[in-house]
Amino acid sequence: MKSLSRTFVYFFILSFIFSCKIGTESELELEKVESKIEILPPDELYGNLFYDVQNKSIYEDSKTFVDAIPQENVGLIRQRYMMLDDTSALAIEDFVDQHFEVPVFSEDFKTDSSSVKSHIQKLWKVLKRPADDKISGTLIPLPKPYIVPGGRFREIYYWDSYFTMLGLQEDGETETIQNMVDNFAYLIDEYGFIPNGNRTYYLGRSQPPFFAMMIQVLAEIKGERVYARYLPELEKEYNFWMNGSNAIGSDNCYRRVVKMNGGEILNRYWDDLDTPRPESYREDVKTAQIAVAKNPTLTEEAVYRNLRAGAESGWDFSSRWLSRNAAGEFDLSTIHTTHIVPVDLNSLIYNLERTISIAAKQAGNAEKSQLFQDKAAQRKQAILKYFWNEQEQFFMDYDFQQQENTRKLSLAGVYPLFFEIATEGQADAIAQKIKEIFLKPGGVVTTPYNTGQQWDAPNGWAPLQYVSIKGLENYEKIELANTIKNNWLALNRKIYKSTYKMLEKYNVEDLSKESGGGEYPTQDGFGWTNGVFQILSSKQ
Image (tube, rainbow, N blue to C red; front, side, top):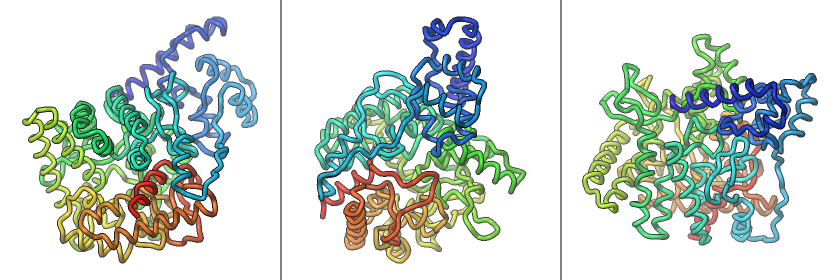
């Protein structure tokens, strides 16, 4: 979003003017200045302090400092840091401790129940955050209470929240669901889209668009009038994903839209910024340096863009976005997310189009309802045309630069079953492939490739278990769906019995081992695991 980047630059210049103007005045006067710099991401908000903290590895997790809460006026903190003589790692850590509330991981919550369901019901209170009453550091304030995933994830996350809501629905937490939907509607109205999470450093990207599915959950509780209420936000989100559809140039792509060979407009993941992610700063810099060293035709900015786009996908990271190196291994430095038109994203936007059609009908706008019904029908045909691989008998992502399927198997290929896009014959073939390749003792594995990335083997994730199970049920593959469900729930219970924790992800291949991969350790909490467990275990 180019206008967003300009906004960042504008407020950065504004903060610079303030600091220059007041640099000769007393600290008391500086503290009185009400600058808008607080809406900035941490690299612009804290300047050299941010870069020194990250480059000198003051904290093991790059996300720690960017979530810290400044205890004084940010301009004053930045000015004091400029005057600091000692910038050793120890001195910087001491400076941060003096001027910020640094988040620490707390494991204060202890269960008193042998029942997983009871434990989760108590966890909702632990994971709930009150409405935010002020801007503080990088947090984007939300007007109503919400549920966070847990662990290092201290803010609301977009696509996580749909799966969390499934459990909240099962547990009768209607008010919390309503509040979270309203928070997402607020973000759409305020920013034109739902950011990855409510942090300023997420304002360049969104996540898989599940807002329409959240409205469906709410409609199941409160009735179909809910659809019309959120029609404006549904349309705004759609416009965000489709922005630039009429401005596609000779390269056949612009932001999140791609023009296919047949003239169809489909979508890809993107990020409006091409800098290292502040919350993964060191990791991104290292990846970009390796990538450029291996391929001098690349720019670091291109690598950053693709890493950010991978984060927008929610699959950060996966073989889906990578190429094999000379040794035949998937290498993160080969990431090219923006070259790929993903099957899951386009299935989600198909559902968004259908939902807008329903909402418009409820609002009494028959013409708009028909328009979006037609858009959904056209996208469905495009999904069947570009993502179905006849040879592999599976839905696969499409590399629009190579003009062919990526030929990589992943559970993103079950989304056309989840949204009932696939034909009966395709569903039969996919069910067979799941039995042969994806089904494991602990559920279904994300991909069959063991790459060291967390969205690959041997890991299984709650949302993909639910999408797979529901997708198979849609096509009457009940026995296979139940096998996946029983394997997953048994694994959840086994790990809970030995650790009293609900984890972000699980090793579904070897039940004696932990999950792994990615940029951080497996997190405890955990919003979407809790939600999926509650909804699946209710149907046993």
